[in-house]
Length: 312
Length: 298
Image (cartoon, rainbow over all chains, first blue to last red; front, side):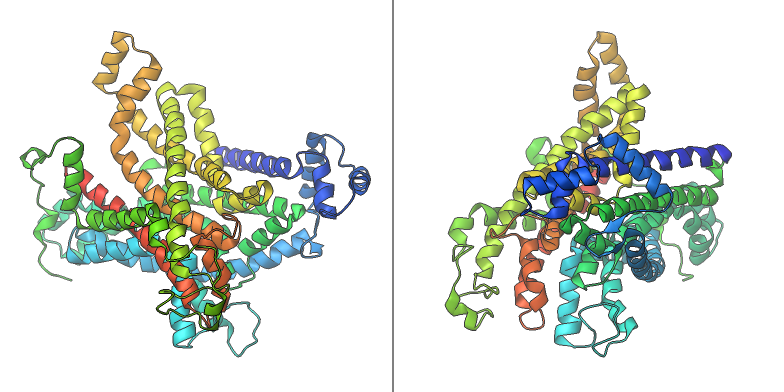
């Protein structure tokens, strides 16, 4: 266990190190770049040179990277040019908003896709299986923005039941929960399509195992074969996939956030990238990668808990 | 749910040899017709390929020309079957022309990723040792990065063009292929025909490309199909986020981006391009489902 933890910790640090360096290098590769982005396209070369000198950006990349890391370690991530606030505060605010969306969506995705995946996989090629397979394939095929447009045109434009934006500002006469319905629905439908097919595939495989046949032949009722014997084994492989969705839910929902004008982490990163807000891009990339590696580790741990055979 | 156990849990599938086996390329294509998802998927793709190929003939208007008179009423009419967008451009023509970039970029990026990923995966799985370690670790690093954020950083930095999109898609998808091919190679390298080739004194390059790779093609083809669908989604998403193909040439994602803010008034402007991209991705994913079914049967 200690070796496992150490190995993962080293990989986490290595990944953070490599990615942060790549993003840093990409943004600041040539000395004039940072000052140029800071001053905009209409600044003269003299102004750019002056700022480069003042910010001491003319020093080698590695030196400045080491300095950046040192500052980051003490919690100083710099100042966001786009949001006119310290990077740390900007990231926390948007991350909290995304966490709310992600938590609700995750709480819906897991039971929804487990039920459908297990129902589909318990009798391969049955009519129910084919229907669920078709549904999940369709859901995974429609891009999030298209799904958002489809749902919005029905529930917002046609029926008028829900608001078309989720700005989290309680104005316009829509409650917070009403605002969250459509974004959550789009995320759940799009993401569940993929998770359902994973759980289904694993369930199909488990149902062909000898112990299932034994359970059936010794006369257990079908529901007990499924709930007692099949489900736990069938969830071992998909658990990693399910946990990896956290990663998608936090960093990948930029499209849904854009469709519904939700003030989340993904949209913050898009704005930072479009605005060339270097400090925010660098810090945001670090957060995203750290989170991704952590969910990877979480997946491995869950895998070990569910499957005692690999605990060695 | 205490229904009697149905037979399908217990039946053993009949030996594959008893099935009709069509030979060669055409036989394989003909077998697609056995699977409904594959047929429907292939048909959808074919329709879009024809539309893209014949775009100059099919599109009623030039994709970028504005019909200012149509702005009075942008909804579908006899002159503009799918209506016009907020600049008076014919939506049908833009959708027809917009099929071209998608159908070139997505498969091109899949081919690039498959070529690069296969080479890396073969080398890692066959040579093992430090090559394996470096390849797997770098793949893990790329894969652990939330790709959409990577696209945003890279495309806003280098600017967005068709080639840059092909490039980022190739680089970010290759690690997935590498992982699959490595897994298959680890299994295939122990086969007798690989041992025989080694005995004949063939080079490792020959063994990897001629003996191992062709035997890994089944899962790879299914994956390429799925991957094309995902790439189309990503191209749409990039367009929607405003970091895709540069305007004014028609791009499905970009068309939605320009008009979804006007949905309360003119929902058709965003709906039609959404339907176009969805149907194409559905086509590739259904084809993948069908290919997998056919693959499992023999």
